[in-house]
Length: 124
Image 1 (tube, one colour):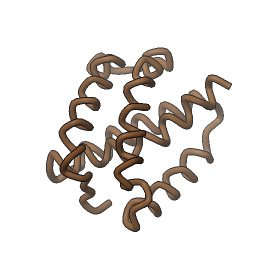
Image 2 (tube, one colour):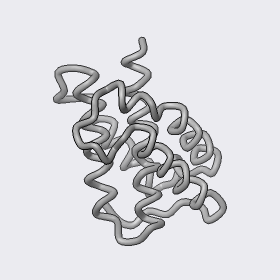
Image 3 (tube, rainbow, N blue to C red):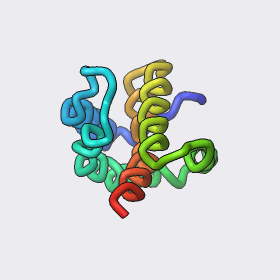
């Protein structure tokens, strides 16, 4: 996955919301339960709408990645809970391969709609 970038005007805001999300879910404690992940839903929604408004998700470099990830998380999972966990752990793994703070923030933003989709599926 090449280096992604958010627009400069939202990058610091996304970074702050990302930190808030990780603090809310208790990401530093290791194995996260679905209830832990759901604690971050409202913050993830803020990120999603901010990033969506910027056009990041419709970008020619981002759209194919989103489609591929969406297919990957729709398949090969026995439960919605498993898919949510897989999406979260894949996001963290991908973020850890970032080459800059901006790339780190953008990779987080890339996974937000996928994680939110799995959260909404759990609620329905």
